[in-house]
Length: 129
Image (cartoon, rainbow, N blue to C red; front, top):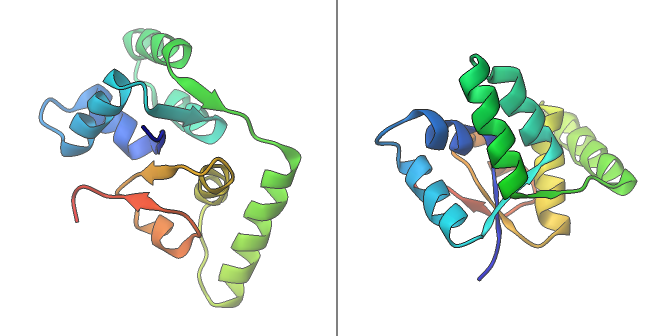
């Protein structure tokens, strides 16, 4: 069973939507112990938390799901990807490039509907398409 790095949009669907397709995929990945987090996603989730209840849910989530470590070379690889894309007229968020870099280094796919990832060197799982 391969692990899956879950992007922020999918975690939000899992935590907030009652009938979200992404959330259903996240639930299955969590149940099968395939779900992964990373620092950029943790930061984005905390930034968007709406109150004490969501903060508590996130604390439980962070203690239950494996979090991939960012190493120094990940910053370099993400920066190189972003610079190459910018030379071609494409500007993407640093967080997305870092998430893609972590997924590639750890040989896992990213569960996301974020269109930015189609420009990055990473395998994407997008159940909506």
